Image (cartoon, rainbow, N blue to C red; front, side, top):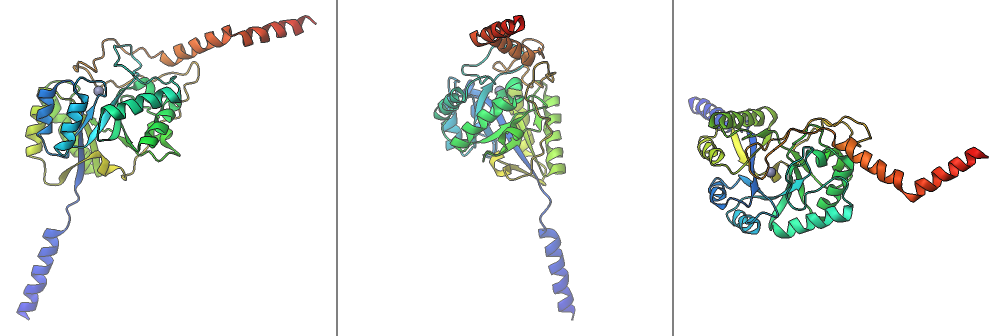
Length: 311
Ligand SMILES: [Zn+2]
């Protein structure tokens, strides 16, 4: 009897201690790869689950993507997309008014320059990702290359999830930017926020940049990760439910463009040099309006109309 009681007790304790702890899954992606191999190599020395996003036209794009893959890290294409604010742009930056063929060409080129990529996220992109029509063209191309889309969420009203409807493209959303500032305390606070969100929601994706300060904080934080937090690749979160908080944005003329969330202060390739100018959409449509107003068809119609008026 005593033996039986002992057996029950030890079974119960085994169950308690082996019961799966409700773990939060945390994915970390380091953007802007391909320009600073020295700092980037330090990122590649981190746990393999830390993933990297490579700018296709960066000097060391192919080299760093290959190195990342060979050392077990997940690779994403970090594709430049037009921001609302005016600032120097990378070559082949996607703009909402580009044709499907042009967007397809740029993505195909990026795929060839960033080997082993399984996903794609946006570099800047507040103007592009807030355009439903623009993002629908991107999703068509991503489907062809079997890439997932990680929305960097550089603007609150991103249309990425909406645009992916009807395609096979899976969309993930960034929850935390680690290094809006280069202050170690701030980065640590942001990291802790990501951990807290992962714990609360089951998973979270944090994005950082290859700065010495970010690397230092990550090296330290990852070596003392809480026991209930598991570091994962973004691709392992593709089946987690994603909530679309956007409102439809077909950028009608005169519509108010929400201000962008530009996270890239202090990064050479991502820097915001000027305050956002939230007039992009209306300016874009007024340009279209001007060119339509100028077309011979419109002039013909006006002529006809005026002619009818005289009859
Ligand atoms: Zn970037």
